[in-house]
Length: 465
Image (cartoon, rainbow, N blue to C red; front, side, top):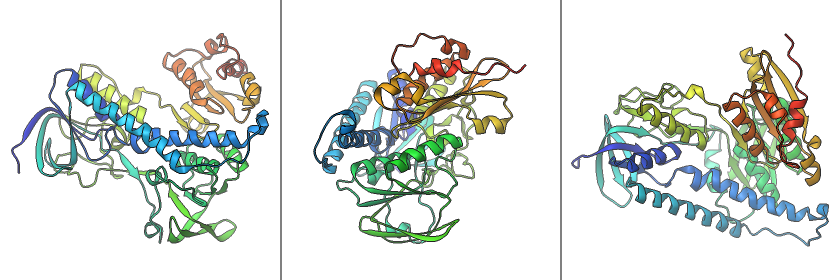
């Protein structure tokens, strides 16, 4: 084994939390090394969040072009060049990677490209991508190895070589018939995008509704919108067997409440959850314990079972969002500076970037009922929002939960145009512990989608006590 090289901070994985930890400590004058297998900056800028939103935006452009007559704009036949769609995405990714490399150079943190594996506590052996081996040790160690798409154990599925989001975002041809396994956020985003590019699309979901964590009204509204665009949706569908090869011809046998059926298509996209990348990296030799699902076991301060070793982001079982991985960094950073921050202290906002998007923060109705939290529900259809009327984007609704005993906003959900931006207003109010009355009386600019919050909260029922 090569002579160990010692660093103040050693990080395995360069995703959201890992890279921010590296840059912060590097700029603070500490000796920092980051070991990254492939994706500089993690999955978000390379193969997930930003690339998918890039291609979704291209799909929105195709959708607008096809429906121009609705707005008085007359066009001819619309053709999508998937090679150009892909190149537009690749150009963005390249710019993002270059920006990451610039941050590494300017921070002084060393980026090491290779396969890292723990061989002892706080000790990594790295098989370098360019050949050779290095052994690294760290006074403080951070694990940020992320997750990957799960492939369900269904006869014939793995042999069919299905796509995950990674391969789907690299297509330079249009699938004649895309079958999406999984009715969650990533699956629905890409299902709508490829439908708008021109593919026939079928979504297969084992559960009784799309987006299983959402309230029934949000799920039903998204389903109505997607089916209205021609996407076929099969709920409560048990996958029995897969035949054929994705990219050529495939057949999926299903069992539903109405009996067995077969779905014929050309391509399969698996979007059925994620599993942590914790196997094969020697965490047992590092003294780092895992949960029964394979995630790194951490406390509310993101400390692992090994002293001076932390885990950040997806692999720590944190909610699977880049912004939460980045907040994991802030929690650990502040605690190392003497703070007392906890993962229990935060709200977890998120968006699904369909058109219209879904956005949520705080409690939803199902969670409030499960926890026994008494709330006041207020709901407004998007067609009541003046900006929605002006633009014709009237699909969806916004709703909020207000505490029964006081006027705090406990949760907000929106399906509608600019849902993420409107949700951010409510999120900020919740962070500030503002009563809903402040938003009800706010002088929002007219006409904006956020103006709808005034209409929404004006309908809040009075306290019952």
